Length: 101
Image (tube, rainbow, N blue to C red; front, side, top):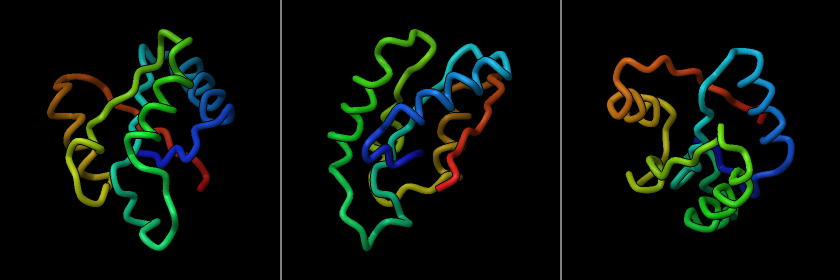
């Protein structure tokens, strides 16, 4: 998932562009629980980042927000996120959208 600390306009524009370019039905934002790569940095609480993401994406019906990483607990790793999303959505073609950071 993404840290989204905070989520910003760039995240939303990038997600919209990718959805349009690839004809995606939905873009699921997945805020991290505990971002493993930022253990030495101050990060806002996961619940706050989740709620900010819900508010920021609310106006776009193509966007949704998943709690999958937050509810799992422990450090968040991409392979766990993708495995869990695949388990919850069998038969769905998944695209992984990531930022430059």
